[in-house]
Each structure stands twice: as structure tokens, then as C-alpha cells.
Length: 292
Length: 292
Image (cartoon, rainbow over all chains, first blue to last red; front, side, top):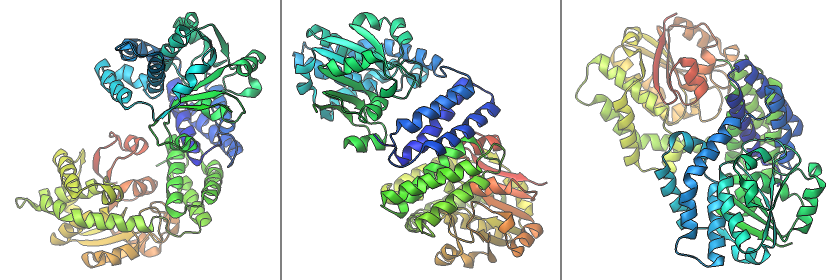
């Protein structure tokens, strides 16, 4: 996906946010902002891939902050909150003993809803009962783009590219069902910390490595998947996959720049540029399959 | 007021917004955004006055859009909506025949609430009953910084620097009371269109020139008041004023860079940098007097 005008101010806003997560030193924050405006000016041009702007900006911010992971504490909050709400989501997915097709659809829906929730805010301010109610609303509403039936026959050898902490716990509902149906799951996480995204460290801390067949990394702390920095084993996994499942917007932004397939994008369309690229409205729940 | 990191992305967001108001040509919008990122990079530095970044950015956007007033239609919507809601505000100000002090305080409060309302959105989507209810809530809550009692003895020769269309109608409640108390009002509007701000054309269309003693302009289409471009008669008016009343955030951002006084700032603190500079919370209603 190409960069959109909206990405420019969304990026600077995110840099400001992560700078404040990392430090109280306002002179340092000023320096980070000024330098990231310089990088934005250097990299931003109509038609360039979104990640060719976002990755260098975040990288420069992390360097200047001298912080390998500004989201360190926030990721822990997200995971703790998601642990509290996981049983609610699980019971909705399995409620009434649904068919395989329905079970898979519900698990995918739960994972997509997980992509939408701001577990960090919830963990600090919102009671679990609010999650229960809001999750139920989104669950009842269902998927706005639903290709899960077509995905069901492709689950032999799934490569699942994870997105954020917190939501990764809801992703395990999908892993479980793929395994129950006899499929294999290769989980792909970021090679280094970037934003609130899942890394190998998070996977091990949460014990999720025991729920999948293997865990690979993107080989970098780039936004989404930077194919030029991807290890050979990840490229092989993509090539051999019966289905790639890509979670969230950053993976969508980067993987749509490559000829991969079959690939299914699971996400909540949280901003207008991504929603427009997919052809849905902001807020829509998407499970869209491209068979190539 | 100096530029804040938040100004950088707020500005790019506003440029995107006004570009879409002006044109459907996405290639032109792309060009405007890229060029305004360049101007942001050129002008943004910690410690520079906010308007030394915002004015050149908006000026460049208007040039590239080849549009002297992207907010043209929106301003009309704001004025029409404000005309509908004006009687509600007026009746609350005069309700029960208050004392001069209380009447002035209420009129100032109504003008400050007018600084908060998005008449453009209301005009399109929100019924007048909603305005009635919301206005009443803010009115009951009152001013969070209230120097109106001290201002009351300074109303002989007021210079009132206006802000946006729509809210200008509520400002007339203040003009009326100053006149009733025997004072003179010099209204100052922008020299050329900028954002949603009031110009001489708007004042004449709304008949507001008949409610004040004279109308001057800032001499430019800069954000707020650019003193270097201010006509001599405005500089004289500032010097001779018994009280300058500055409405809204853009005037606050620019006039706080100069030694003027006595000056009262009337505004809703709509963003964190301005709220912080004043020492209030975002959303607070402010009528703050500096006597110098």
C-alpha cells in the first residue's frame, strides 16, 4: 500500500506519543520531533510505499531516544488486560458447539475484534464488564468482509503474521482451531521491538510458542514485514504456505506491496487510507482472501 | 506562544482538511501535502513562535490550491448555524435581568462557548435542540478562569480581536453590553481570508459593522495577528485601548509574543499546548486578564 497524506500527520503523532512513553525530557522530545520532521520530508512522496516513510521515521526516533522499546511497559499492560478478557472471548467462540466452519469464522472474528481493542487504555481505565459488552456488540455485528469459508480448506500449513501485544492472545483462538482441524501453524513475529508489536520475547513470556508448530521472525524491527530484510526461512515459509494469514494494518500495508498468496488479511480498518484501499468503511471487520 | 511538537501534526492535518475543502483533485492534494511537509521542515524548530510555522504553511497551501479562501462555503454554514442558535444564547445571557457585572460575565461566557462550538458540523448534522442543551451545560459550568470583574472597569475603549465565523455572532453579545455601559468597541478582523476566521466581508454581510464603532483589519491573512504586517492604525488602536480583548487560540498564540496591555484572552483551551501555556486543562473556559 502506498503512502497517503493522512500517514504524514498520523506518523508524527505516533512519534510524539512514543517519545512521551520513553522520556520526560522535553528537550529530547523536541529534538526527536524536529529530526523526524526532517526524515518525513526526506522520505515522503506521493506513490512511495507507506513503510518506506514510517520505518525510517520510527527507527530515527528510537535511535535519538536511545530506547530499543519505548512501548515496553505498555505491551505488558496490553498482555495482562488481554489475559483477563480472553475467557469471555473464548466462551463466545465455542458457545453452543458450532460447526467447524462456524467455529473458524468466530475465532477469526474474535481475532479481528482483538485488532480493534485498545488494551492499553482498557487496562488502565476500563472495567472488564465494558470489554464484555463491547466485544459482544462487535461479535454480534460479525465480519463485514467474510472469506472464512474459502479459507477453511487451506489450513494445512498456515503462516500467521502477528500484529500487536494484547490481541495476540485472541489470535491463539485461531491457532487452536487450525490445530484441531489438523493443520500446522507457523507464527511470525517482529525481529526487534517496533511499536506495540509482538516479538519472540513476548511469545515466550506468554507461552504462545507451545501453541504453534514454530515461530519465525521478520528479521527486523521494521513496520510490518520488510521483505528485503526477511530471513530465508521466512521467505521459504511464505512460498510453501497453504495460506498466509496477515494480521492488522502494518502487515497489510507492507505485504500488499508483494506478490504473495494465497493470503488472507484479518484486520479492523482503523483509518481511512487502509479502509479505502480495501474498499470498506472505517471500523469494518475484514477477513479478506486473495488466492492469486 | 512558542511552537509545540503537537503543532506539527495538527498543522498537517489542517492543511489536508482545507485541501479537501478546496478540491477533489487528489494529485493536487498530494502536491500540497508534500510541499507543506517541506515548509514544515524549513520552519519548525523548538522555541520559534507557533505562527512562524503555521502562517507560511497555510500560505503555501493556499497558493498551490490557487484558492484565496478554501473555507468560503464552510464560513457561510457557520454563520447561518450561529444565527439560528443566537436567540438561545441571548436569552440565557439576559435571563432574570442580571447586574452589569453578571451581564458582562455571562456575555463573555457565551462568547467563549462560541469559541468551542463547531458550527460547521452542527449546521450539517446537529439539531438546534442539541446546541440548546450543550450550550446550557457549558453555561452552567461557567468560566474556569474568570477575570471579568476586573475587566469591567476597563471598557471605555475596547479593541476586540475577533476569531472565527459563527462565533462572531456570540461576540456581539459582548459588544452590546460594552456599548450599553457607555464604552467604545473597535473590532479587528483578518486582512485576508485565513482558515475560518472573520474578515471585513463577513462583518459587512452579517451587519456587525453597525454594532461597533469601527472595524480595523490585521492587514494580512496571517494566523492570528502578525504585528509586522499590522497597519499603523491598528498599532495605534492597541496603544490607545483601555482594554484589548483577544478571542480564540490563534490570537492568543500571536499576541502573547508581544508586550501589550491591558489584554484579556477569551477562549476555550482546545488543545494541550495552549491549555498548558495558560495553566488550565483542555476544555476549560478562559477569560484571563493581563494588566501589564
